[in-house]
Amino acid sequence: MLVDKSGPGFIGVRLGPLLAWLEVGVLRAPGCSGSYQEVFVIPRIDLQVDPSFPEGVPMGMPPEDEVSEEGYGFFRGVWDISDASREDALWAIKEERRLADLVDQVTETPEEFEDVAKAVEDGAPDSLPPGFAARYPGSEILEIVGDGDRDEGVLDGLEIGVAGLSYALSSIGCFPAASCRSHASGHSWSHRPVVLFAAERPTVHWLEPLVRDSGCGFGDGSGHGELLLVEAPSISNLMDLANRIVTKAERQSFNR
Image 1 (tube, one colour):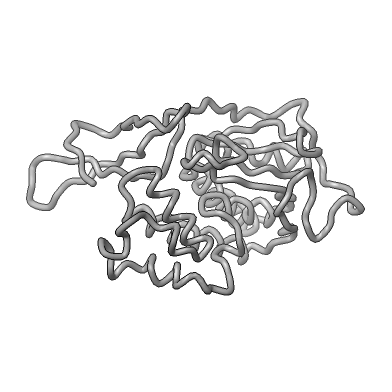
Image 2: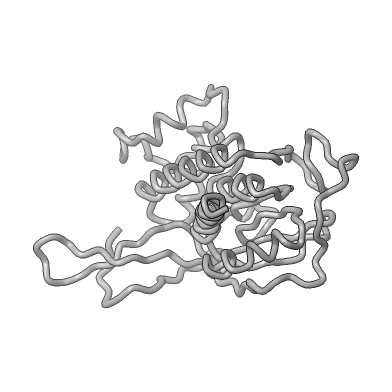
C-alpha cells in the first residue's frame, strides 16, 4: 500500500483501547521525481520504554530444581529453550525475518497481519482473511500454511516477532521463560511485544546498549517468577535487538 507523503513518519490507527501505528518507510518510484511512503503494517503501539539498567529487578539464573521441560516461571504452554547455540539463534532470526516480510507483503492492516501470522504459525488456513487465497493465489504464505494438516509448526512453535530474540538471549546464556508478540485481535496476555527471561547481572549490563539502540526497554517480570523482561512498541524493535545480540556476540568472540 502506498501513501503520498512528504517524509518518513507514522500513520496512526485505532485498535480498541490502544493506539497502533503503521510503520512507514520511504519508497521512491524509478523514473519519478516524487517520493511515496510504503506502509509496513507490522503493528506498533504507543509505548514509552526505559532502556536503562533495571535496578531492583530480580537477576540471576533460575535454580535447577525449579526448571522442567515446561520451562520456568508461572506460565502455561511454555517449554525450555535454554542453551541454544549461535547457529540456533541465527536460524531463528533469519527465518523469523523471512516470515515477517512474507506476511507484511500480503497484508494491509494490523488486523490482517495478525490473522495471517497466526495462520502461518498454526498451519491454520481458516485463520486467513476472507478471500486471501483468491487475492494471492501464488503467495508462498499459502504453501506454508498448507491445508491444516501440517505436523510441525514454524519457528519451533514460537511466535513471529519474539522467536528470534528468545533464541538470541538463550544463545548468550540467558533463560527465556515466555514471550508474546501481542495480538491485535485482543486475545493476548500482553498488551505489548515482550520477552521475559532470567539473566545474570553482567549479561544485563552487556545487553543495555543494545536494548537502548534497538528502541526497546527493560521491565520487571517478577510477577511471573524471578524474571526481568524486554518490551518494545513493535516486534520490529525486538527483531532488531535479536540481530544486534548475535552480531555483538560474534564480534566479541573474534576479538578474544
